[in-house]
Amino acid sequence: MAESDISPHLLWSVHMIVKRTLFPGRIRKLNGSFAFIEHRFLRNGFWESLSHYELLLYVFLVLVSDRKGLSYYCYDKICNILKINVDEYIAARDALIKKNLIGFDGRLFQVLSLPDHPVVLKTNTLRKDRTTEFFTLAEIIHEILPGKEYGHSS
Image (tube, rainbow, N blue to C red; front, side, top):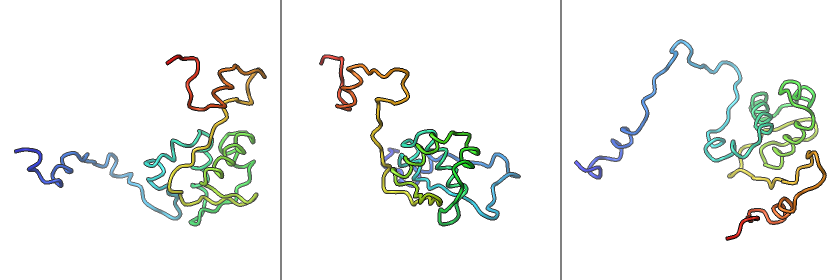
């Protein structure tokens, strides 16, 4: 029998993974409040678009927010819980705002519904935390002409 003769439903079931509960006595239950992240967050590239600190802050805000996505933790409490410094917190918070994932009014956070696609911010390759104030010509050219290859002849 050719594969074209098999019904699409049967083909799908052949390729599906059969799952069984590993620990039947430990199945999760929804008790009280809970947090959720849409599957689109992983499938549509939002996870990959975030840095380590952005992801850490985003997941924290999802966990502590109410059903409307609101929370009001102050920055020193967030930094303490996440074990990050204030500069890392501010950079992550500002990036999440620019990526249209959270809102912040100076006191209150809101985790927003996901936009249609992840927002990818242009990164500054001429980093400010370098040990030297000088940059190579190649670094400067790469910053001016991103995506262009340099130092290689075609």
